[in-house]
Length: 150
Image (cartoon, rainbow, N blue to C red; front, top):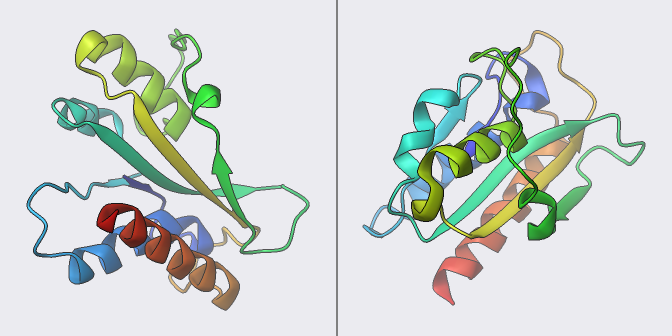
């Protein structure tokens, strides 16, 4: 699952990863690649029947260098579902998406979750990724391909 806004520069890093993986792992029928974009709610039902989720998104205001890669521990994701009636369907974030998916899918929700976050600071109205964000995205792609090969 790749999150991001394709016209907000480095915020599109999750989409970049998904697009590259679509070209590089075309022969793996047991892998579903989902471009979550910025309106992820309707995609949540596509998680049903999957054993594992690997998610990629940008993170801002970390204080670290652009392109710094974070791997979020699974226990950070397993918290109780967020019941927020004010969540707007077109502004849902990855943690909210997974929380709602867990609540909706219940026992069919995959428990094996890996989250990669890439530090960015440019979310201006641009369609180009910075070199640092793109390099971090390429690292994530390599990590995902290694994981799939194992």
